[in-house]
Image 1 (tube, rainbow, N blue to C red):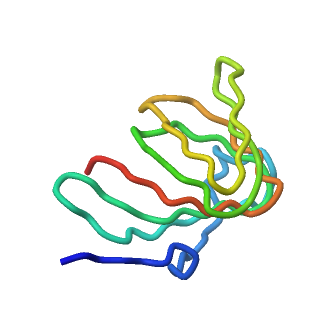
Image 2: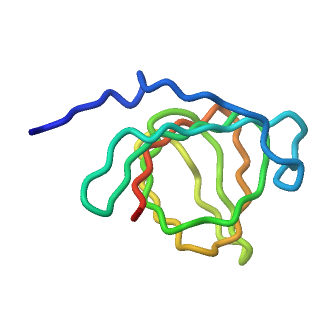
Length: 110
């Protein structure tokens, strides 16, 4: 059976990020798993305006709204805007600088 979701309509409950991830005080983020098929999980993630750090898991994502950039520990920068597709290898240390709230669809191996 085909399942279809409108990513913009998926409810995401944002929570304050842990202190050790914050660069900008008060940044929030959240996610909602949407579905799974085989060993793949699909969900929606949001990040408020501000900056934070993360250590990534293997993930493919598509930005559906918002703007900002991701910088990795080597200084590589990816500009984020609607339609951008990215691949985050596991263990990558990133800094997220969000200038407009980001909403992305993510796919990971579960």
